[in-house]
Length: 166
Image 1 (cartoon, helix red, strand yellow):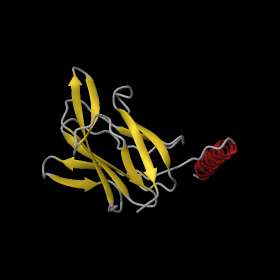
Image 2 (cartoon, rainbow, N blue to C red):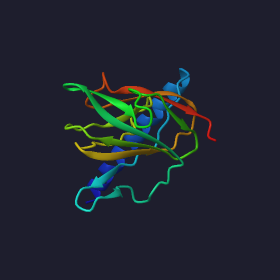
Image 3 (cartoon, helix red, strand yellow):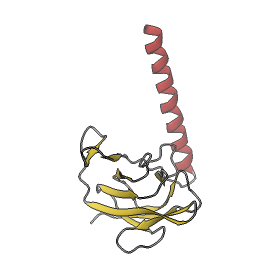
Image 4 (cartoon, rainbow, N blue to C red):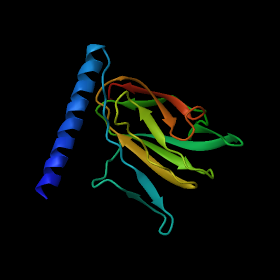
């Protein structure tokens, strides 16, 4: 039992060391690493309620509504739920709880991933067909990032602008 604990400690220390080296190298070259917390929200079909898989609820003060649309057979795009723009630029705020709520009325699964330049990327996890999901995060710095679908990265992609919080 002690060898398993020691082995887990060595693995954890190795991962932490690698992350510190990665962050240092990126900072030397003028890049900044941003790590955000992601929370998945899934809709329960039987009770028609929404449950959050995180131990604590995050109340978002900035919410963006996206949907998925099949534009041609097998070709999907993210759609802004309020103005129907394809693969819209999303505006979120620093030091603010932001949420991207996603409706998936299609017959295939999707997963929204934010590209931060870090090994740990915030994502919505899989959003099953005819389900909904949510990605909640609280960025700590301004900048422009991209987002994409893990399964359709060439047609479901867009930009996120992180601006100073309100």
